[in-house]
Image (cartoon, rainbow, N blue to C red; front, side, top):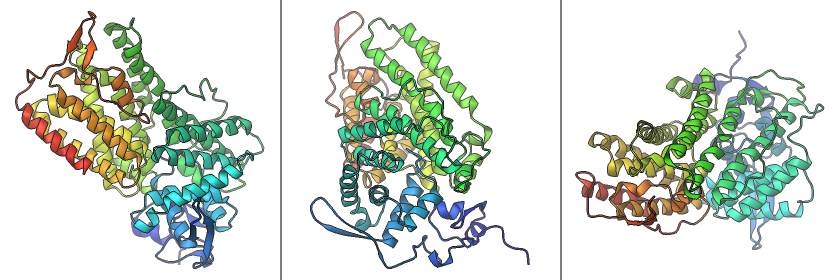
Length: 530
């Protein structure tokens, strides 16, 4: 009888099966499921998640800052780590070789602070109230243990710092988020993660690469969110961009070489390099008095070409279409694939947002860019919907909250001021965004602030029926970019080009049925505040 080359689970799900270690195939290890190809038979529990050697033992016992004792059993730890890998890893950050991580957990060679950080993020996404309640004590203990070990400059400590920074961002502690990322950046420089080391094996080298580029990515987002200068700029690419995710996860410890093409994360990084150009243009629209409309159009056009070039550079297998979506989902890479394209639509939406201000002179360029803004915001929402409907492709990490709020602000413009034939589709897209925000609010405390920001934006729109609701001013820059900072009430008195102050007016309605549209928006926003 011919020996099966695919495990039972992959055969049942009709998925490609690639064995990576004694723990089994990449699909089973990634989703923390038992694999029929695993040589660790004693560690498998048929029908359940990967189980440790002592199924009923206590994996760790720790004490939280308030003295409460929390027992983390093997089963709970495996469940929470699996949640993290399934819903977060390879989205906002890419830090682990999954088979190595599972091995270190089972062998208890992983540091407690790193394990608790992973489990804290995993518990935040648990729909089980008891498991969800573990997120705070786990993160507190992780912080305590890390602080006691902070003088040890290690890769594990950098990974822990990155995870805790993400936790702080989700807990509305932006100062702590910045602090943890700042320490991680310094440790990364001390360890020279950005310089190749010829003695590293493939797994170690690629893990270091991904940790370094995760910090590079986070530096853009964290700095923008707080309106702070970046730390990692003018970095030469001495270190390679991340390789294909499947090839990396299939690599074995002590492999010395691997041939692989660039992965999804490599293209995320070349995309995020365009982000500061978008940020700087939006800030210049407010701060640079010498920037007239023609100059702004020229700058926007150059950045637009950069985005177009990036999109054209994508390999055919990474472009956004149903076939590629399904293929990445099948490989267990759906989340990273979705994250790549959500980021693209978000950056494009930010670039073209200024053209929603109908007070700008109407030109062929301004009309085209306004339509592009609407198209990207709509495409973002449609992809978000599809990701929520496809297991393994969910986009529920905290950063998605801000991107969804920006997309929703454009959809609100379309709903209030758009054409009649756009209304039905726009309502459906806006509803998709709101459902996603409501779901994520159950996971992340920061979503409450995001929803409050969107409510403030909606209130600002409804205070004025004039089309200048989406003009770029300091308030709008904070709304679009500085997502970690509080949003004050908008001042509707602004200086026009002549230096005269212009008061917004509700005396006229720009379109028919505006009152009805206002009511729909108000009713929809009410569901977010419930």
